[in-house]
Length: 229
Image (cartoon, rainbow, N blue to C red; front, side, top):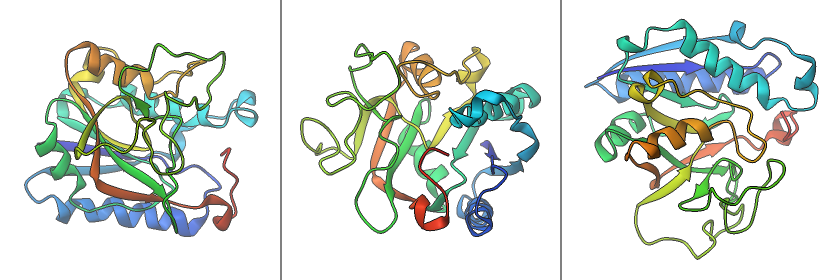
C-alpha cells in the first residue's frame, strides 16, 4: 500500500516538539516495511487569517485541505495524519491500522504525557451521539469522550476496537473518502474531523478507536504553549 504522511508543523511550535514530530514520522518508514510511505512537510500550507487569533485550529484544517487540493489522490491508498505535537506513537501504527480496519478510519487512544488524561476529547465522539449538537463546539457529557478515565460515558468498553462517530488527533484515512469530496470544515457543533468521519460512516465503513494502541500528546504548557493553539 502507498501511504502519504502530511506533517503539518505550525510556525512557532517548540523546536524540540518539531524535531520529535520529524523523528516519529521518519520512524514510520522502517516500522512499516511492507508499505510505501512518503512524508511531506507543509509549513507553507498554513495561511494566516485574522480569525485565527480567536480560533487557531482553523489554520490546521485549511492546511489539511490544502494538502488534499495539491496532491493526486489516485497516487495514494491512505493518508496518515499525526498531530505535530505528539511525542510518542508506535512506529508500526500504520500497518496495525490497515490490518484492523482496511476500509475505514482508525485512531488510537491519545493521552497527555505524564498521566492518563485523554487529550482530544472534542474530536472523539461516542457512537450514535452526533445528533447531540450544542450551539458551539464544546465537550458534552455523553457525547464526547471524557478527559478522565473511564473515557466513555457508560464505562470503559471491553473490546479493543470501539466504533465511534468521530476521531481526531492522529488517524489513518483511506483515500477513497477524499475522492468522494470529503474535506475538513469549521463546524459550529463538531471538530473539523467530523465531515470526513461522517462520509466514512455514511458509506457503511467503520470509524474505530483502537484502545490497544496508546499514543501520547505533549503537555503543551510544559513546552511553552497554551491549550488553545
